[in-house]
Length: 333
Image 1: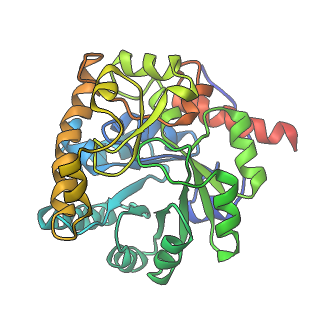
Image 2: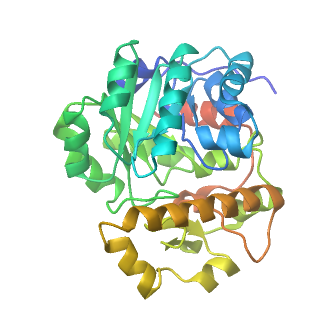
């Protein structure tokens, strides 16, 4: 179905990213396949590449995967860079991915979980911009000291690693910083999208909404789990990565429980062991999430999702989602 594109929505974020509509398809493991990233960007939002998802889950050599996306759209795309330094091999690989991305023309980057300075330096040298994931003021202040251009404001309604503030409280806490703020968490329908912009955010980042897109290469059971979930079905567990993570309640999640056991909890608190324990949890969860997304429902399933699942009622094309949300703002102006 061909749709007429609504007029662009100009915000500080869309000007930074060079896009028409202030909508990010957030980087998701294991859900960020090339077709989904490209479809979001082609529609006027911006899709963010998740490198491990691209290479490990979807089997692309990294540069070839980026070129595959570029063959599907010539619109801007972004890259997610996890900058935590707990695993040297991963840090080296991330530096390689950043270099390749810049060589392939990527100019929008989203960093998380560490000091983004080295990414900022590399990206700014090529004329790009860097936004950083934050959950509260102290992390925002640190990121801005390292030169980031904008903030992805992860609130308590987000899927995956959620924050602790409501969308309204987080905006109030960060509004005076003078940089673009992008809401992440709790946007699953057009009404919630407009509400985010009305609060004052310069854009939104959505994950759960785009998992329930036709281009997202996950098992039908994952789509079904999101469509059928209500807000109360979204629970927190720290059994995936050692820090609280929002998932859909499943038999496995119920069996695991919400918190790590006493030994694991001690290891997660101890300065010398917490990185190793988080790495153990993360490696295990990468395998589990990959299996769940591709093989469907079983007693071992874990499906990441945010509170926005309660407002998502159908699987639809990514481009339709972007354009429908954009029209909802313009109809009310």
